Image 1 (cartoon, helix red, strand yellow):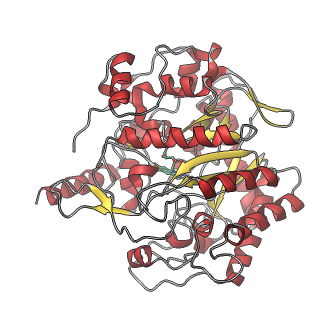
Image 2: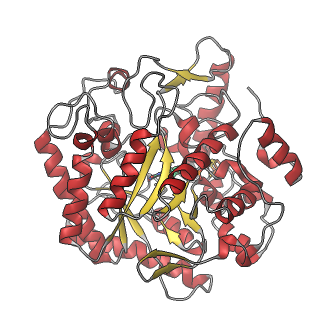
Length: 482
Ligand SMILES: Cc1cc2nc3c(=O)[nH]c(=O)nc-3n(C[C@H](O)[C@H](O)[C@H](O)COP(=O)(O)O)c2cc1C
Ligand code: SF4
């Protein structure tokens, strides 16, 4: 299925027309107002602590750490570029595994020895500080959080899948390619200890908050929907499925009262998808309508979202004093069309079966619904990159209307880290840097290569991996034709 890319609409009226044609409630400003407009307004994110503008950088792993979990030069470069962006909030930096076997790839940063972690996490903060100094943003680091993770079902610490799910799920278990062993309650308790240790290392290194990540199909997200799991951490009751999260937040709070806590959560989800065998173009379709797992999924029709439990989760966050919430959807492994809307799918994905703008619309609608229900929480929204040239226009309109507090940038920052700075300064965006959602930054790591923007970032364009990446994409195109 072919769609007109957002970047090919020449005027706000034309693009607005397309959004209306799709029945989307996405708002769009005609002109960007720079730092004087809504995106340049300060925001109190914690008592007495303010953000200078409404841009946030989402966590973005590079699959480029060393095998012992340390940052490489590429990792340091990425964090410096995050600092150079001018975004007021750096959310997470990237997923930091609390233990070696919870890594999603062999090159993910992870906690081994606490003193080593404090040193290395401090070095990452230094890069952000340096980046900010380079753009004249002063010495103030601004709030930076570290995203803490255990990959659970999607663990691949040594390359091959070494899945340790929170619950049985016939459909996803079969994708692991081997017999999977569900984590026991004792193993979960040990993992909880590791989270607390990682939070301590982050606090000692100078991070202002940690993100207790509950998204994208990883361990804490899967626990939220673990209806079939027996014992204290699963079952039909919401209280049981959130017990691990609550215990963990309370333990971090008790040990580190000065450290703020945030949560990036897949607030809604749908059934895993797969390439269709009925259509020549391998467009995505639901893998099984009988799927009865997930969090924020309608269990009568898993192609649809259900916000009843996600709203309870937001109320729970508020009662726990977790004010910073980064709203995302789905998982990059089983429904990437929802999680990161793209024109071109990654190598393990499928062709879009609807205009990706529809899924951008879903991101914006859900964060609107969340903000309306919990106005005192500070929400970061996701899904903006596919808007391409219209990103600032939509971002400004959403923030102006109070639908979201901060606009989170994912892929766009890999190709064009200066976007927030340029938009706030009222400068035009160089078209050659705007992410066109080619998905190379996902296809590369799926095939064992470091992640980065191979098509648009000059340093990645020249990397030796680029040829292999092109080869993989060519072969995929051929097999799609066959
Ligand atoms: C290469 C790559 C790495 C990512 N790494 C993480 C991560 O470590 N943690 C996380 O929560 N999300 C991660 N994401 C998801 C992004 O943070 C973001 O949710 C997603 O790209 C959609 O936002 P966008 O449309 O602005 O790109 C990653 C995405 C990409 C493309
Ligand atoms: S590789 Fe570059 S252009 Fe492609 S999706 Fe990633 S950031 Fe965007």
